[in-house]
Amino acid sequence: MKSLFLSLIALSALVLSASTAQAGGGSKATSTVTVTNNTSSRIAVIVDPNSTITNLIGTGDTTLTTAQLNQFKAAGGRIVNAGASTSFTAVKTGSHTIAAAEVDTTTGDVTTVNQLDVTTQKGKTVRVSATDDGAGSVVLTQTSSN
Image (cartoon, rainbow, N blue to C red; front, top):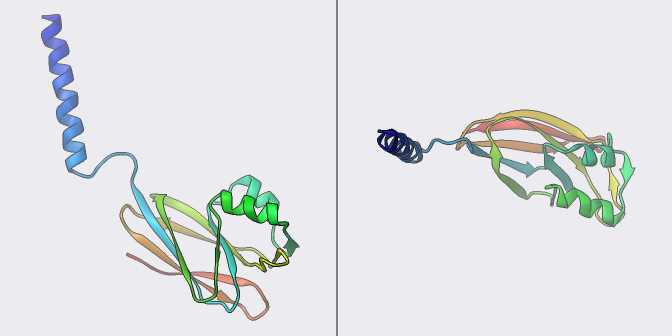
């Protein structure tokens, strides 16, 4: 009787896991955030900067060493040329902060950091445009979510 009961539990678990896989369910719902650099400069952009990166860059208006720029990239940050785009894939569904600033990769100079809060949905792409405010700061705007 005990082995029959355990067999039924194992079978139930197997059926449940198969139906979850077929339905595309599970706990790893992801989305994409695409940032387009519509400024005339390179920008540094990151989704959900950790405390190390936040402390490194602060509010901007700073100069980073090559090692610090590499640390930014290692944390998931990207340097995006003027007119180019980058996509952050496998972003978990939910609320996120995107941070960006103009960066001179030769000198390490970083302008004021600006942030945008977005909410992503499973399988969808949030599109963000980075523009220049005319005073050397990046302005982030969500342009669509589909």
